[in-house]
Image 1 (cartoon, rainbow, N blue to C red):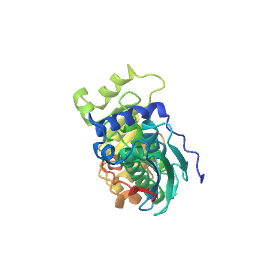
Image 2 (image 1 turned 180 degrees about the vertical axis):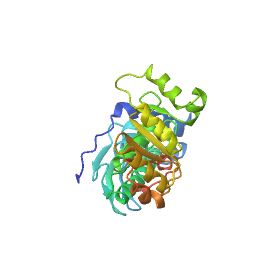
Image 3 (image 1 turned 45 degrees about the vertical axis):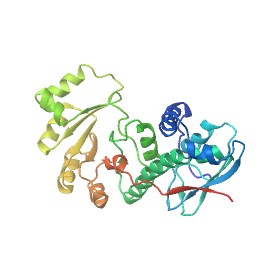
Image 4 (image 1 turned 135 degrees about the vertical axis):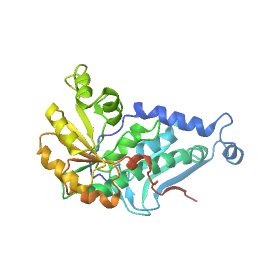
Length: 287
């Protein structure tokens, strides 16, 4: 196996329910009627997971667990690990065992691997784009329902970092919170009454005037929403390193470098996970 990085792995305990739901969705009540009608119960096969295009691998163990969830006797020979760059046409893993299992689990495994590697590939590309700046690429909560664990792991595999996993692990006061609370100060004051000492506080601002108000209140981070690069640069200058600065909103791949050049600490991108282009990967059976 080719080793390159030390990306902390996902725990099977956490993603096993995702695999179970996906297989139940595909098998339904009747199972794989096509394969069951054509392939003998004792038929064996060997297949290769193959990259159809260049990309950054993420989700290999998740994909392989689809097959082992169907049959513990499946044999696997891994050639790569998550976080590695894969050229087109490479064999990523060899799988051997029940032909029925390989055929029936193929689509579920490739769906997961293609989505996860698509996210990691885009994240890798963007991270390389801004490598000469301090800004880091960050995902958001705009993930596929039920797949947040996998989506956010894929961002890390590509060299990005995670924002909140959910509503309970960080405070982010957004525009609608401000509106309902009657202003930034009221919202921050209400939060501080409940804020635990381990919880960070971030506030979204739309203008430099709002930014100054937030800085006077003392927070941990500011989300600079839908600001032009020139205004972002002014905001970074005003902050002057006192809190983390996060740029968000309307940032396309073409604008990432310009945004990074403003000096922000983080660039958060919702489309990184909600509009992912699947990585092209296939399962090729040996003759």
